[in-house]
Amino acid sequence: MDQNTEWTSGQLRRAIKAAGVALWTWNVDTDAFTMDQRGYALWDLEVDGVLSFEDLSAKVHPADRDRVRAAFSATRAVVGPYEIDFRIMSDVEVRWISARGQGSDEDILARQMTGIFLDVTGRKQAEEGHELLAGEMSHRVKNLLAIASGLTQMTSRSSSSIADMTSQLTLRLTALGRAHDLVRPLPGGQGKAALLGDLITILLSPYDETAAFAGRIRVAVPRMGVGEAAATGLSLVIHELATNSLKYGALSVGTGTLDVSGSVEENNLMVTWIEQGGPEVVFPQGPAGYGSRMLDRTMSAHLGGTISYNWTPDGALVTLIINTSRLAS
Image (cartoon, one colour):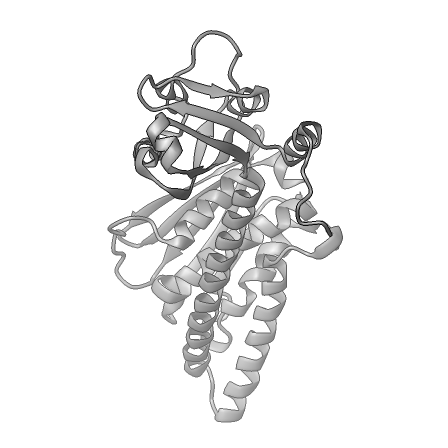
């Protein structure tokens, strides 16, 4: 390939358009900001009047605004490449923008900086998705270790021999595996809708006692179907609540009980989770943990509902409000 090829202005324009690149210049003395048509479209601005950097920065996300202003101010004396990623707010969405440029002595003397804008929303969303997945996987692994420890202690209370304990623990861990399959989404839309009561019962079966304390988990909910899309979200919520109960609540002791009941009110299903007989309830302090944030996000985004807590002296009382149309989807 000829390394000395000179590109025509038409070729450069086509390449810039294909890459989705927006061009900009900024006069650091007058604050005048100039962009090409792609830049105006990217920032969701009308091409009229005089544009300043302050006008542009008003559309930067408030959490990023001071950082962006400081970075652009610093380019006045930068020789070499510079880059910053930030969010902007359009009328319909939040976009991620990458501002890039190459400062030189000539630019600094001319008091005019030049660079490009790139829409990197897709990349940022993918990065956030990977971070979320990594956090969720870490959270689930820690929970599974805590569950295994809790189930071992639970089984030891109702076992008469090592062989009996081995048999019971194997059954519980097998049931936990079946329940865990319900928590993860199946590829390609596999799986079928389930009855609400069956779904909750399967998820809670590993935590129920045998022998002396058999039947301490009671499920009484309306007979209604749970669609494939909603099953994963609801399973995740029930699994998380059960894990927390095994670690801190009623299921952590042999005498604790759990009642899960439900009723339909207009277009909503209300599921009530009532724990009794567990350790003394301590009201959570400080910011919400990862599990709590995941529950809130799952309830709102996947089930069109809410989750609320009442930390009564007798035990936790959790209320789930789920949109019935979302539950069936």
